[in-house]
Image 1 (tube, rainbow, N blue to C red):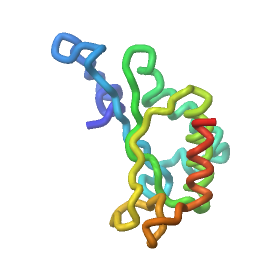
Image 2 (image 1 turned 120 degrees about the vertical axis):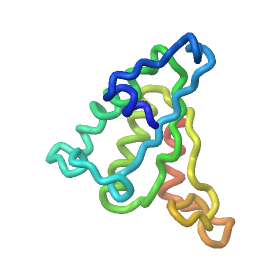
Image 3 (image 1 turned 180 degrees about the horizontal axis):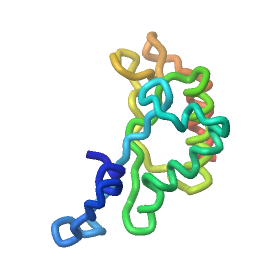
Length: 134
């Protein structure tokens, strides 16, 4: 289950079982084409996303290490807008810990960073991601 499940259902993290300094929270962050939600249809999208991210995972950042997992998908339409907002948010929060899924072009369920030739990089995606390290 993800962090939101535990938070929403009021299941606290038991620090006797997993101490704070041994726990890494790694939320999966999905965009509009993968995980449709009402907030993607909101008239204030993508400005509303900061509050969503604050309420679902960032609130734990003062207590735990957070590493985002699997947040990259299509780079078109709402997904592109969402990803730009996410990277800007991550940069603002100095959150540059993440697992990128996926690099390789033969992933069947995600959109990748490397093109089908296994050499060329999807430039727009890369440029957006690179903003976190500038």
